[in-house]
Image (cartoon, rainbow, N blue to C red; front, side, top):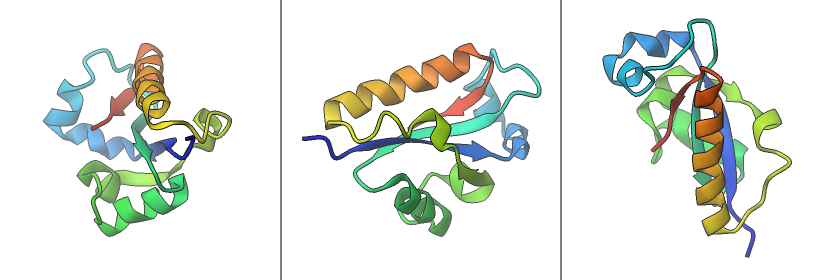
Length: 105
């Protein structure tokens, strides 16, 4: 059943101050976006709000999350759990391939 969503959150470039984030993105091209890519059984909007509130959220998103980037996921959602897992990974790799800094759990 298709009830999972992949989402992308734009992060403030200040996230690059964190060594752990920089080390996860060795091919980052300066000036390109920093993002978080995730998947959820909620709507992307609900999940983003949970991140910002700190409810089962990622610390980078809570502290540096600016907004959702639906242009990268809206046409693909909703998906089955297996397809969402696959698309989350593929999308993160695609963005990394464009020089973006990407964090995913």
